[in-house]
Length: 139
Ligand SMILES: [Zn+2]
Image (tube, rainbow, N blue to C red; front, side, top):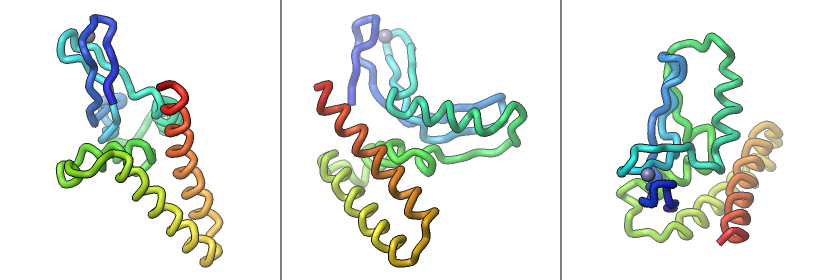
């Protein structure tokens, strides 16, 4: 979960609040930041989701705040990983637990015949598996 900055220092990932048009607060957005040169960038795997969400707000959004970890499954996982209650747990265990939890919910959604919920869970599972595959391929 670390990345090198163009200045040579190590960038750390943190959950931050992004403020859009001075009124819409998007909390818990995973952002890489460098303590040395203050450069920061959105965690690449969630970038398209964040821009898609901002686009969906339109040009004149209502003031308010939203939790990005409710929208993005990866942000949700990072939120769990960085929570100090989970400090003792390896990241892979947290990810596996979440996958199992989503699979349980998927069974429940299926038995209830809730197509919308099932679709949402499918998207969430795909976000995790796509990210895992990309990580393993690149490392
Ligand atoms: Zn830097």
